[in-house]
Length: 326
Image (cartoon, rainbow, N blue to C red):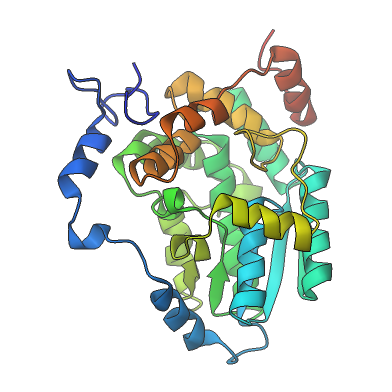
């Protein structure tokens, strides 16, 4: 059963649908409208944070850039709108698509900023173990824990006080895995890391949660972490105009959700999350955007259609010597 207002599916005890066909999160959102802590973030708040760090170090910020439209726009905002000097950081675990990497390359060349491109096979064995053990932990959550831990480490090495991402308003809470929608996913992830990964010497220090990542990172010095998209209100049309005309950005031929840029392993993560929970972290993000009035339910349903066959999914799984569908 799916909420008639957003796109979350019932998955008790995290998500439940009432007799009117509405999920507990949409009900709670309506109750909390107008409460102080639900007010939108203002650009003045962003500028205050940026000015605190601007000009204090060699790099004003570390900008996580995957090559997707949101992270590339974050880079554009930091350099063009706020005149910061970033170091751009891109990780590749072996499943990034060529179009995404080319988008980053074009942007950093046009904007004339330093770029660190990090490619590793470290996560391939993790994905293999996750598939073989049939964990309910979303592959994307495991990967997010790894790449944020890596990002904090790079920021520490280069003494960068501020980390900038391309998270949307629907991902404000996702960064730290707060919210009941994530409870079962987060618990499954922690159990997978503890019971499977940490038994292997290579992964004995792998964090169990994003909260643990932040706690470990704070020992080396606290850093602000944010996305300009939480504060700004550019229309999608304006963003695409900048991306296409100024930054030579191109959408990849193959990605999920539709009209986004994500890695190939993301397809397997989505397949397993739908199987285990009935929804993915994208459903959670888009449900929040629907409630905020930034996305229609029909638009979200169109973007979230998953129509990939077993041949395609097995081709990706084969890269880690696995088969998921016979």
